[in-house]
Length: 171
Image (cartoon, rainbow, N blue to C red; front, top):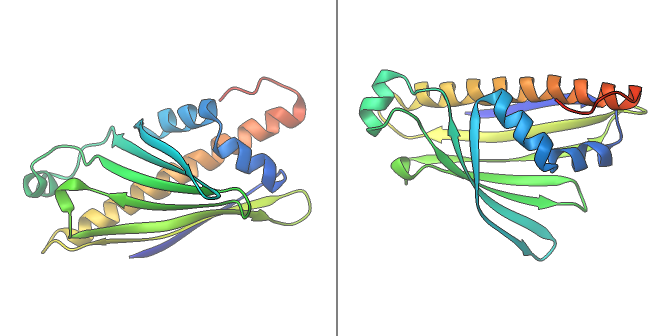
C-alpha cells in the first residue's frame, strides 16, 4: 500500500525544517498524536543525522490483530536519516513481531512552495504479509499515520501563525 500526504505551510522551508527537529515541538506533536517516543540511538554518519526511535501509540490494535501478534499495542522502531542539504528525512520502520512479514519505508521532504510558503510531503509504503489480516492492519496503520500528520499540520499552522503575530509560541 503506497501513500502520499502533503501539506502547505506559510513559512520558508528552512523554518519548517528547523521546527520539525525542535525537541519541544516534537514532544507537543507526539502528545497530540497519542504517541510515546524513546530515542534509542543517535549518530552522525557522513552528512546525515541518524536516529533510532521507539514509538508506542496509545491506541490498541483491533482484536484480531491482538490475537495474531500476542499484544495489545503495536510498538515499532523507526530509523530516521535527516539530510539538511536537501531537507529530506528517510525513514524505515521495524516491528519485531512482524520480522520478515513487514515492510514500511519512505521519506519526508520539505520544499519551497508558492511565494512565502513551503510544502511538506510524506511518501511511503506499508506492506504487511499476514494472511487475512495484513491488509486490515496496514489500513489501520495508514489511518493512524494520516490522522497524526493532519493533527501535526494543524498544530504547526497554529504555531507559525502565533509566531508571525508575535504571540506565545507554545502548542
